[in-house]
Image (cartoon, rainbow, N blue to C red; front, side, top):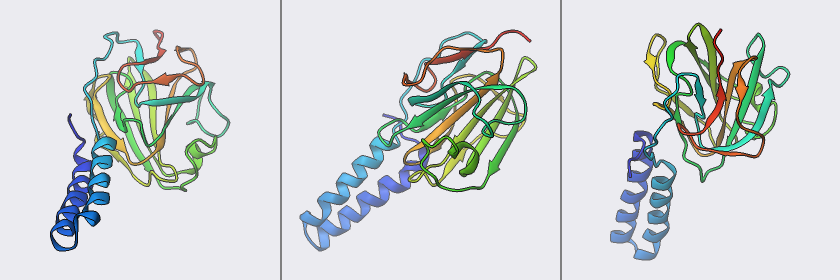
Length: 210
């Protein structure tokens, strides 16, 4: 199983402490640290995904459960008319994030903020977050990584100007969080509240030609 590189310090640190504890104190002290190391390996797992091939598809950028699927929440969306799909990630979900739509990265913006529970409606506008704006055929799709109570850091590995493909990895959110996707108002949403989605595989919306 592939692991996200941001997880290696957590996994290695836990196993190193387990080794030290086991050799200097007792195996009883090492066991909980080994368990932590295994949890970190599980959390930072990065499975391969096969993405549907259709340039009009908007793919889920994360694993999780759909919280919002419809008109953008008041004060949550960027300026303009948008539809919103929000996905909540539990600590058990894969936290590697994937590009939702093919195109060119027009903007990457980090916005400091609070650490409210990620499932709250106002978390998208109040919490610390990172936004990736992708231009696809002259239209914009925005993927917003949002921290939560446990997820205190988002990692975004794309830069403005990059050409990206739907389903490619672009970052990770640590220890429970939320992902918002904003699509043009005339897009067709393909998921509903409560649906379970898989990053890079589930089609959450379809774009129409501008």
